[in-house]
Image (cartoon, rainbow, N blue to C red; front, side):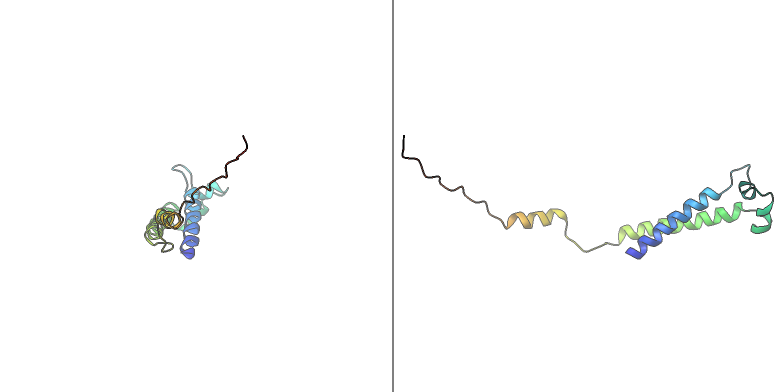
Length: 106
């Protein structure tokens, strides 16, 4: 379960980075970092849009699968809290108050 949690956190961070790196509709990735046209040579002739869209889709799918998997897999096989409270309170019995000796002086 700990390994799944670490992978889930890494996927979350990667998903955030990929979403923030996506260029807006009028802006190219290369121009976001001060260059012009550099994304076409690095990501191919279509540019970075299709690469980041595919990467975002894959990371989002992995994120959803991991979330469902971590929800359905129990962390530990433990009883509910209510059952635990019932067993601890059921074993103790109330103590009767002790009789106080009465003062004979009036």
